[in-house]
Structure formats: structure tokens, C-alpha cells
Length: 231
Image (cartoon, rainbow, N blue to C red; front, side, top):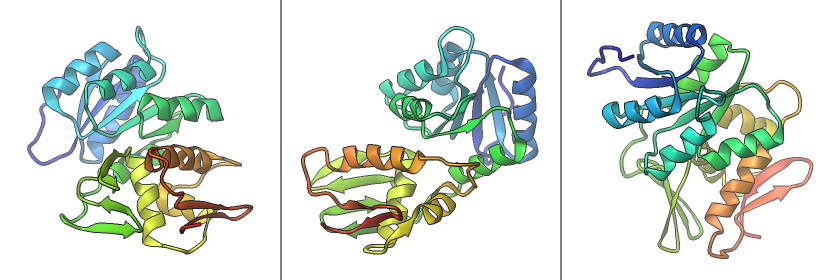
């Protein structure tokens, strides 16, 4: 089902099989000023992406037919880099890793909570950073306009959350940042209970920026957090 799209409001594609939940989420998005498209399954969602090029995609991990993880994998294999938020029922480490490996940028948990969801959407649909602004640390450069990193001439594609994490670390070089500081400034919302989501994202970020065996730049400060510095 398509909605009439405006020329100014960001468009969000919602891929959700549960009709009641889809209506609830769609209404929240519309009331917050976003145009909304709906697709009941992964195949329909991919079709909508091709036709409308949404600014953000929200997909349930549990769909009729192909799963939300399949949708993310297929979307990325087609070269689409739109940010994807995955709706999940569980918050285990394996679930977070599956989310990242599938190409999703972030996730939120069921049961659906309007305020938490819209806060996450706003984070991903903030205006772009000014053109030509870059951060540098050693041989690593981060382009804030394209959200790409460059190291030794090698371009590195980042998910939105990886970009935000690296940006925050590079904005505070050689400063030890606590896990609490990182959660507050990168995720922008509070986690309930213990969460090692930072460790999961640091691991994937290191794999990308050290892919050619380059020197480690993101150092772990045991029991405290992380710091951007050369060993």
C-alpha cells in the first residue's frame, strides 16, 4: 500500500506483516511529520525501495515469507545504503550480531514503544552534516558528508551507527570515553540493564578500519571504555 508522498517530508518504508502493528507505527510516523509507505513482506518491501527510494527503512525480523534478516541482506547486496532499523523480539548478543551481519544499522525491541521508536527515527533522519567537513586521526579520515571513512587510500563503507560511533571517537582523540558517555552520545537513549552493544559495534568497526592489517587506532581501556589513540 502506498501513501501520497510530499516533496519535503522524509519518507519511511515500513515492512511489517502484522496489520495492527503496521497501522500503529505508520500513524506515529505520520503524526511526527514523516511520509510513510507500507509493505507486508520482504519481496514487497524490496519493490517499494526500488520504486520510491525511502530515506529510512523499518523492517520486522519476523515477516510472512522471507525474514527481515533476508530483506537486509538482499537490500545490501543490491547496493542500497539507506539506513535500516530492525524490529526484534530479543536483545541477546547473537541477535545483535545477526542484525549487524545482515546489514541493518540499528534495532529496537518489541513490545513497540512509540517514544523510543520515534527517538531512534529522528536520530537517523537528522539533516546531513555540512559538505566538505572531515575528521582526521593518523592515516584515518572520516568524511562527514558521505559518511565514509578513508584509510591509506582505501574507502570504507560504514553503517549509520558505525559512522556515529567512529565520529564520536574521532571528535575526542586521545580522550578516554566511558561506556556511559558513548551510549548517551552515540545511541542517544538509555539501555535497560547491562548491554554489551558497544563491544559488538567496536568489533565490527575494527574489522573494517583494520581490514588491510593497519595499526589499531581504537584502544580498549579495560573496565572504563575506549579511546582513539595509537598504541
